[in-house]
Amino acid sequence: MSEAASESRTNATEYTVSEISGALKRTVEDVFGNVRVRGEISGYRGPHSSGHAYFALKDDRARLDAVVWKGTMSRLKFRPEEGMEVIATGKLTTYPGKSNYQIVIDNLEPAGAGALMALLEERKRRLQAEGLFDAGRKRRLPFMPCTIGVVTSPTGSVIRDIIHRIKDRFPLHVLVWPVRVQGDTASAEVTNAVTGFNALAWDSPIQRPDLLIVARGGGSLEDLWGFNDEALARAVAASDIPVISAVGHETDWTLIDLVADVRAPTPTGAAEIAVPVKADLEATLASLGARLKAAVLRNFERKRQAARAAARALPSPDQLLALPRRRLDEATSRLGRGLMVSTERKRARFFAVKLTPAMLSQRIAEARRTNDRNLLRAQGALRTLARSRRAELNRAADQLPKCAKASLQRHRQQLALLQGRITIEPTARRQRVQRDMLSALTRRGGQAMLLRLERLRGRIIQADRLMATLSHKAVLARGFALVKDADGAVIKQAADVASGMALSLEFADGTADAVATSGAARPKPAAKPAAKAPVAKAKEPGNQGSLF
Image (cartoon, rainbow, N blue to C red):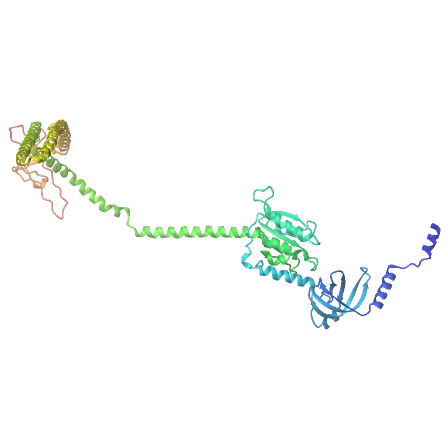
């Protein structure tokens, strides 16, 4: 059996891969040389740099690659768009390089919007009617987040681009929630990731992010269909954390792009939107610090100049103190005379009042006699009033009929009761209290008088000492003499002394008479005065003296 199998294999015709591919190509092109295919355009990105366009036609169960050559693109009556349902006319062929087949389109006719695009538009209208796309509900992104949460595939290039861009601009903590970004479970996983990040508490071991980035690379409508899920769109709209949507390239759009707070054209752009540039912030901070320092210095300099200008306008300290100093000098010069006048006035007022203990005792005795007389008068008046009332009642009783005697008897009893209550005891008690108060005041008056006399005596002693200090006799005791003329007037200048003038010299221990032998020369206006002070030679008491 094995030998027969070996011979049968060796009897089969051998083909190369190119021969098989060429045979398949010819067979497909011969059988399907001209076909019309109805489907939805998917994965359309516009003409390639070569001018050709590559996309796919699909329905709900199959997918067919399609190509439109450059020459055909220029003859088309409309531009193909993603999700558009079309009728394509062309031929089927194979592509040996990938062992797949495709349709080479010669003509395209629109056949209405595709089913997926219609579903997407219907979801978009419903969510928009609920206000999930309104700009007023979208929040501002934090300027400098501490933690960023990224929802994306952990194995793709998207997460590496985001982390690398954040590290270059502003390094911070990045939390990655790994999810599938394509397939049947992609939308549920991304929804759970957004909800899970929002469920983190601020004090949890895993730090709650300040910003979320939902990211995925580019792809066709089918590849990005998981991000058009209604539940995911509602989860993003309900997120308490601001969300940046970075799904697909700039020309792609999904439902979460419309409900997210910010849409980024690419995942790298999302990283640039999420964080500022640290170097720019440092440069700005340094610039603001330098401007602040310069502004402070300028303000300080302006204040200094203003203070200097104000100082120049103000008068000098001597000018400010000149008037108070003069007033002080005048008050000082009047102080001695004022003290003497005040002392004399106080002395005169004190001696004018002849307050003695005998006079105070006399006043107290007079007051006591006056109180006794008033008390006796009050007692007599009460007795007189009682007798007059009793007599009036007796007369009224005699005149009243017998029927009123009982009432009169009651009133008489009440009067007797009231008369018993009216006694001299309260008045006597008040008199005793007043007498005690008067005695206390008498004692306090004597003490106050003694204390007052002691204070006045001390003030008189102080004034006498001050008067002795200010008196000229203290000056005479230090060896000086007071010169007077014959009339007793004090001579203050040598120019007032004439030859032969009789003088009186007053010393600390007595006086002496003298006669001036020569007079002082009067100072001339043009010449410097050179007058001699009169020199007095004192005589013994009782003898005449002469001046030299």
